[in-house]
Length: 287
Image (cartoon, rainbow, N blue to C red; front, side, top):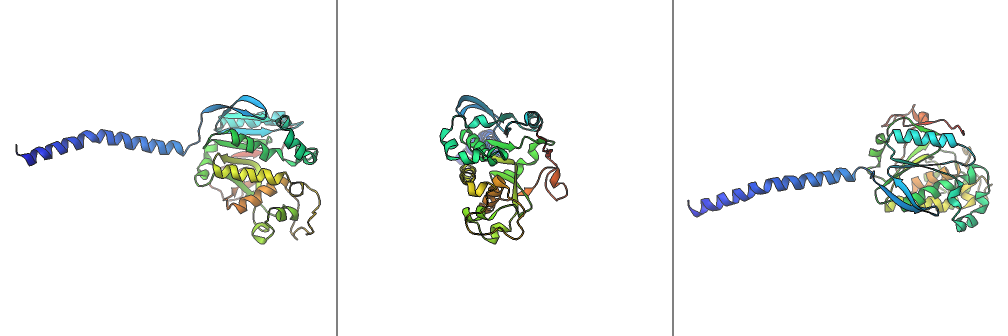
C-alpha cells in the first residue's frame, strides 16, 4: 500500500471517527438554544418583603388583595396553575410592613383608599419579584379578578423580541400632569395607545428591570399617579375622559421604550384581530 493511499485511509478513518462526536455537539447546541427560549421552571428560595427563604417557582404568578378578593385571588391562582403557571403567590398590604422608608416616602399615596393606594403596590410587587428572580425567569402579574382560560404558552412566543409583554386599550385616559412629569407632553405620547395593567408578563433581564424601576419611580409621584387636579399649569387634552393611574404611567413608558403592545387577551379584546385566543376572563368581582 503506497504512502498516499495510507494517508487517505488514515484521514478517512479520522473523519469517520469524529462524526458521532460532531453530531453530539450539534445536538447539545440545538437543545441549549431551545432551552434558552423557554422560561425556567425550576424553584428557588429568596428573601423578599422582609421574609427569608420564600419559595418561588417560574413562571411565577402574583396577585394582590386588600380587604377583599380572597376567593378571587384563590381562583386566579387555581386557574393559572391549570394553564402553565408553576407557582402562585397571593399578596396583600403586608408587603410593606418591613419597608418603613417606602411607607414614609409614600404615606400620602398609601393612605388613599382608591386602589389601596392608587395601585402603587403593583410596580412595587413586580420590582421586588424581579429583583429576587434569576435572569430569564418569567413573572406574571394579574389582577385578582381575572381567571385564566387558556395556556400561557399562547403568549410566551410574543416575548422572543422583548422581555415585557403588555396590552393596549383606547387612549384618552391620562391626565396632563402625568405627561408633563414623564417628559411626554407631545402628540407622540398623547395620541398613543393606552396600556392595560391588569396583566403584565415580565422576563428578568437588565432591560425589564430598568423598565419596571422607572414605572415604580414615577408611581411614587403623587401628581402623576393620583386623581389630584393638575398642578403644573396645563389643562387636560380635549379628548380626555379619565385618569388611569398606574396604567397611565405604564402606557407612556411603553411608548417611550418603543414596546410593541398587543390586543387585550381577555374577553374584552375578542372583537379585535389578535394572534392568540382568549387567555383571561376578567370578571372584576371583588369577592
